[in-house]
Amino acid sequence: MAASPTTSPSLELPADATLPERHPEAPAPGEPIPPHSAVCFGCADVPHGLRLEFRVAEDPAGGAAVAARMVLRPDQQGAPGLLHGGLLTAAFDEVLGSVVALVTRPCVTARLETDFRRPMPIGSTLWLHARVDGRVGRKLYVTGTARLDAEDGPVVGTAKALFLKVGMEHFLRNSRPEDLEALGVSAEQIRAARS
Ligand SMILES: CCCCCCCCCCCC(=O)SCCNC(=O)CCNC(=O)[C@H](O)C(C)(C)COP(=O)(O)OP(=O)(O)OC[C@H]1O[C@@H](n2cnc3c(N)ncnc32)[C@H](O)[C@@H]1OP(=O)(O)O
Image: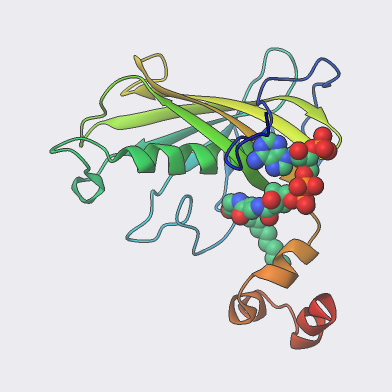
């Protein structure tokens, strides 16, 4: 039977995956990870954003891991007094993406699955953790956990994702030219990537 167009390959870690180390220039465990962009919905200090705060976490196996914190605001409600579920998925996208960036960059999310395990009351704090479980070529397999109000609090959500390493041309070809130019990319570079 033909696969449905919405069916993607599995997110299970392949048997030939290897555990990637942090890039030598990545921050060390305990150090904060600054926003990767001043306007990012996930990590920048923008009024409407998630405003996640990050640090590099220790990984017992020597791999790449991050810890992050997010305070749940009244403007993030879905059900009354509870976090909108899509925002947990957005938080996982950011947190899992940030741990991948400790290994290699740039990467983009190809697939992300969220399991919602408990309601998340507005006013509480999410403590998120993510780890790169393995790499096969361009593919990075990542998992994450969100806990309520403490680093060892009850699990409210878990996630699995596949990120793919891309070249800078991914952004040069697809991002809005004015946003690239604001980062210092020349119109000529954008034209060349798109020709
Ligand atoms: C200048 C300033 C910069 C500034 C840089 C700043 C960086 C900021 C980063 C922000 C990150 C994001 O927000 S990401 C935002 C959300 N994500 C996106 O927009 C990505 C949209 N999707 C895409 O562009 C594309 O589908 C890609 C790049 C993900 C994949 O396309 P591709 O590169 O052509 O790769 P493709 O051949 O299709 O697939 C390669 C392998 O991966 C597998 N694969 C592909 N998709 C999936 C999937 N969903 N689930 C399972 N497996 C998959 C394929 O089966 C294949 O396996 P095999 O046959 O090899 O075994």
